[in-house]
Image (cartoon, rainbow, N blue to C red; front, side, top):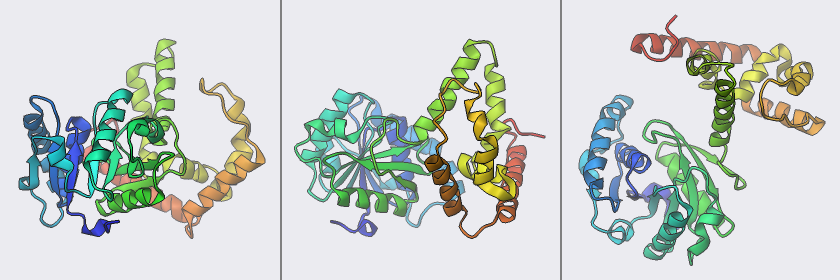
Length: 318
């Protein structure tokens, strides 16, 4: 196994919006990037995408040695992946194509090369069905645009070796990503399932004439979206319980789970679920008490609101 700290070159296979975004991210982090895509105009489109993204990346701060000159578009898949330790696959979201492409990548790379798929929802167990060696295949699910949104969700399939998941997580962290290592395969992963729950309820409200598109977006942008950028829904509700934290919030508001506030059926609030939520929030809070968390949240909200006003973007312009 190659030490992730020693990886200096990566391959991006598939260079559309997601694959191109990955290429921009890796370049900004100081890697050499070998890119390949079978599309007729893929090379030109990739260069346009990266040139568009580069000013934002410069504003965030480039790693030492980062340069657009470290990108090379290759003539073949084999040329792109033959001598790299990490491959980011971002082909079209079609299961038949993913199976074929991942099998080809596994055959074309060395036994220590990690191959990560940017799939939005397929399991690696399903995608790896045609690969002779699936031990090095993992999911590395990003959020768009990958060069700005830090999250990547990592999970292996039934035939993925544990060391490959370890290596992928370590590499992504070194490459500046916020990594969730999932313990089990889950359709849509974590982030997409949460997004999808809001999206489906939004569609229901529009379909029933209960809210407009503009109202739905405003409700998130000027409401919970601001808080979620800082603490996420669980720690946010932990604060909603006041000094009693999540325990008080669940004990006080738990019955509201039975109210018809969404079309989703709420799970039964068992003692085990309640205790899991409470313990999770306590772990996340660490040594910070409620008052400290509130001050931290408020400082962050003020910074976000000021940034939105200065950039004149978003809905929060009070």
